[in-house]
Amino acid sequence: IKAYLAQAAKASQENRHLAMSVETAKVEQIDAEKELKWLKTAVESSEKDIEHNQKKFDELQAELEKE
Image 1: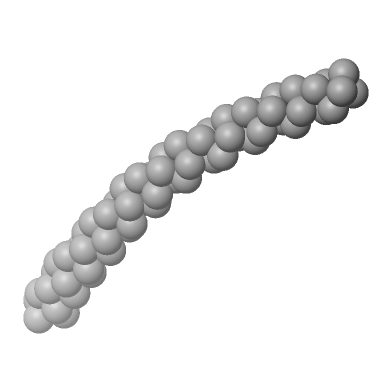
Image 2: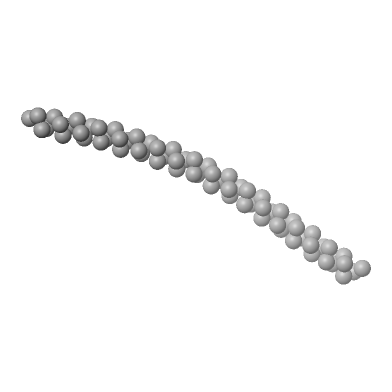
């Protein structure tokens, strides 16, 4: 009986450890998803800036060619 109790206690401890690991992984996943969302927004903003700058460049180049 003592051996079974010791085995059950060990299994219970391992279960708690695994549960904590799962919770930690969930928090890390949420953080990673938030960072991914922020990065996607930053990329979209940068792409819009590039597009705007390209249009402005094209306009200035066309103006220079006229002169």
